[in-house]
Image (cartoon, rainbow, N blue to C red; front, top):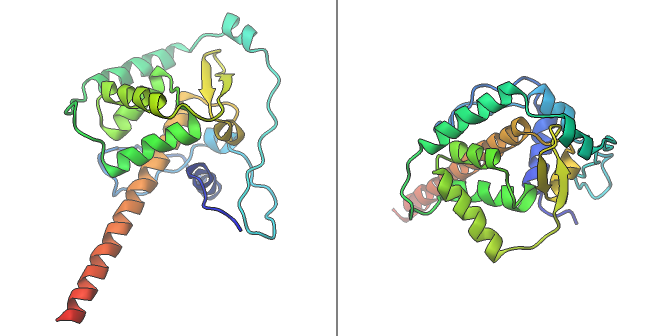
Length: 221
């Protein structure tokens, strides 16, 4: 019997259906149309394998390119425009003010747990910045959440890999099976999709709950 799909399986389904480049994303407005995947993400995602009789959706990992990460670290550096963008995002993240002791809401918690369980429990500084912006929480709160979560749940396998610029990443095996060339841009789009779909799911569940309550009330009256 096929189990429930993981968030990365949902992402793969979304990637298979989306072909247009992503629209500008505003983390404060979850009522906009669903963000789509860019050609870079579509190129990086894994192609689904032939469906089995059980109906389970399986991902076929891409063949990893053979490259020397040591040589990458020696000869490649992040492009100037990437450094500029990271600096701009850091300024945006540090400008976000939220109560230090305020708990994350249902949507924020689901997104954080998805990143921790399915992508990485050791996000890089730029990825922490992206999560702070998308979830609209202070950068310090995002860092503290991952630090506390690692102390409570230091479980699961971690695969060490590198970006095209030689920067080290420690990812979950499920993340490396989905794509073996993670970058800031790819992580940002994954984060946007998971956040958007989570917001939609919560809205639908609340609407269903309200509808059921109204129906029961009418039956009683």
